Length: 300
Ligand code: CP
Image (cartoon, rainbow, N blue to C red):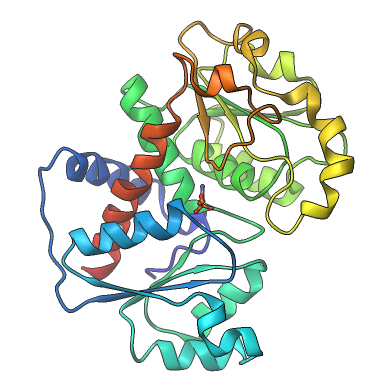
């Protein structure tokens, strides 16, 4: 029911309603309050945006937050997920989990009746894409028919972008080196969600991918857990760097998004990060508004 393990757990209507609700919250139109409610943040990985934006969103909703980084729980000493889930279920009202394996968050949800939110796994990053779509909607007024080009690794962010853009009728182009394409099962799912409205393009050609795009999106080339692969990844990803030359080949009104943290000089240049097309700070702020809408909707 109220879990968000994958972006595709939402119906298209639910996704669009969340974006509208988030925009209204940002504009100060609603002040839903959930005093006594407690959000747990069960994180196995570092986080700045997700952890802080969830915390501030919950405080602004009148609730409380518990930072349950794995190091301060028995999770780090091997307590089974099924046991942790059944215990935390009795204390918390909602939990956001950041971990490696999607199966772990699925198992937690199987054993807990409280809403479980995916705060990033190796497969997906649904909360990020709520903020991304909100940012694109703010810029262009509508989402349907726009083209987003993602450059880089076909990772969790690429997966959730594929699903989210497909659900709102946007075209998605993914450009990355041979061997780093997104999961074919997610590409297939995105194609099915599009129902003929829009298209998915998976290519190794960055210039073809950015042509006519209104949104260029990039992410780190070696994610958390892949640091040891950085040496082999950096040279093959170089042609996919978002720089002024590539941005010039996109639509003239194109904006640039990055989920952050950014590695200037790798996936994006300093000039583009700080340039007129960059919306990365609004995008980061929108994490808070989008997740506030999500929390309010699952706590209702
Ligand atoms: N974009 C994102 O999820 O940032 P954090 O890893 O800092 O939460």
